[in-house]
Amino acid sequence: MTNTLIKFFNITGLTWFVPLVKIAAGENPAQQMRQLWLVMGVPIIAFILFLGFWSVTAARINTSLGAIPGPVAVWSEVSGLVTEHYAEKTKMAEFYQRQELRNKEKLAEDPKAEIKPRPYTGKPTYLDQIFTSLSTVFAGFIIATLIAVPLGIVCGMSPVLNTAFNPLIQIFKPVSPLAWLPIVTLVVSAMYVTDDDSWFAKSFVTSAITVTLCSLWPTLINTAVGVSSIDRDLVNVGKVLRLDWATQIKRIILPSALPYIFTGMRLSLGVGWMVLIAAEMLAQNPGLGKFVWDEFQNGSSNSLSRIMVAVFTIGIIGFILDRVMHSLQNLFSFQKI
Image (cartoon, rainbow, N blue to C red; front, side, top):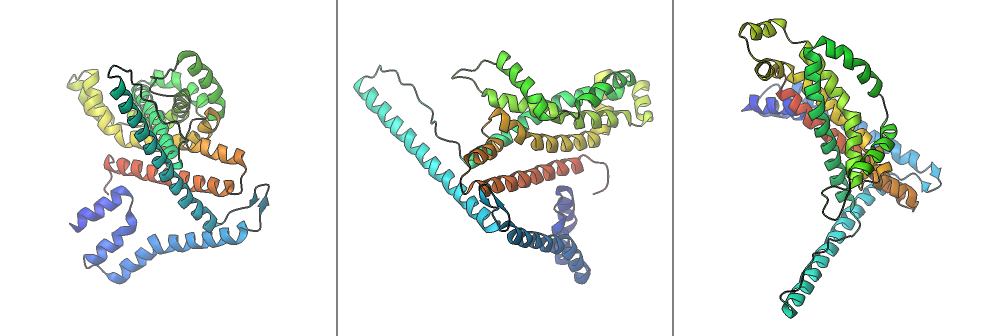
């Protein structure tokens, strides 16, 4: 049981709890307490010092919107945003209740009356915008993965194709989302026509495609490197057994290259989450990027505090996404955990 827990925490990156498990198992308490101090105590002390430095220096910096908010002001805005979320959800529930009551009265007067449900058009809350950003980044990330992995496999298996694609990869890899966005916006506007029954808004499609164009390169490069680095003996075995192309990919190429592929996917998701905010700002997709831009344009007394809340939210979610991909990378890695 102890070994299973330790392996689980190592795979998921939650190594802070390993010393506690070892102490519970009866291992040297003094040694494990020192390890616990290193992995938990030191980071906690560093974070407390950071909060103290932030609190002392923030009040001394004045901007056009007032002093930089300290930790207490930012935390109070967190509770305020959560309160606004539940208040807005209450309004939405009341709206649908009133609509349902009106429709029932209308049908009671005329059973053949046409009933057309109307969606609630209230302002999205902060939690709604977090969900929108996550949906957008995962849409772009999935599209990027579906493009990058097959193309990376082909490039890794063929030196000729790898040489042909490499200049294009090196040219497009460093392009900023701010450069892609106008092109993507024009293309989406020309090719994607929306109506009341459309599944996705143009702003969502534009942001997702921009994320795709900026995040597919790490997965493509790592996949190509992983495939080209496969032991030649394994490839020769496939040739001796006269395995067809699809079987070679399924039985030899993919299992051997998976650690590289997941490393690339981890990098791609991080890049996608980073560029998403800029894409949402300009595309006006109702996510965290638009929240930051609206608060900046708003210029109220609590705008800076709300922007700081968004900064920490972006960082914490980015950390969680990286931990998830790191866990998947460990699961598909051949190294001993």
